[in-house]
Image (cartoon, rainbow, N blue to C red; front, side, top):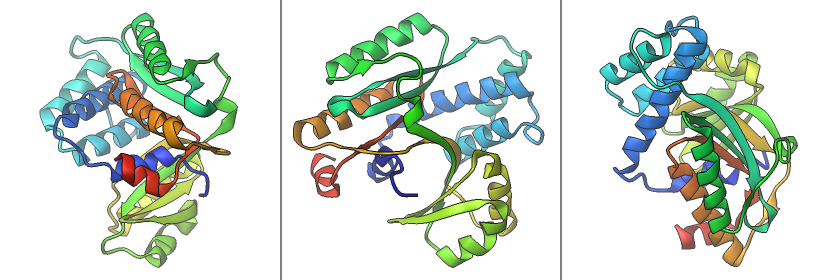
Length: 248
């Protein structure tokens, strides 16, 4: 799907530091807890929980951690209550930012996000200020090793896949959010492994950034990704591949 978030591609190209593993676990534990609280602790009847558990297993999270997060969500164990809050804003050059968070203290979170945005030349916006620039899409990332585009088309077309894009070492499948579970099931039934599957916010248009603005935007996105309460951040910026390599 042309125009999809450049950041999603950049993240896959970045080397994953060991220090980031703890942040990944923290995010996944929050998501599992909230999913279990909202839809129950049975992954077979709770698609959101099933997706979170799949991501946790892919990240090699210990089973005990997953089970504890589920029990905190269902109330079997005491734990923090997280609130889902979406923040919207702008980065350098007017690039739109759609930030999905899980927090136990919204006052702290909004203050910290406002500080980060200001530090890198951005600003926090009102609710609805940029949401209209994005569409919700189901996005599945499949390793390209051992799989062809034809294989994926045959396996998922009837399940609802609308587009398949080859991105270096992975294929990126997109569909309507309502078709995400059926596409995942189709891949599982045909034995094709997938790296991730999620509902993502895809930009309807992009803003080209260059020079200092591009550099500041990448630093801002890194800082937002590292924030403990951030679950997902989407943007509509576009940057030349050569510049990405230079700055990475």
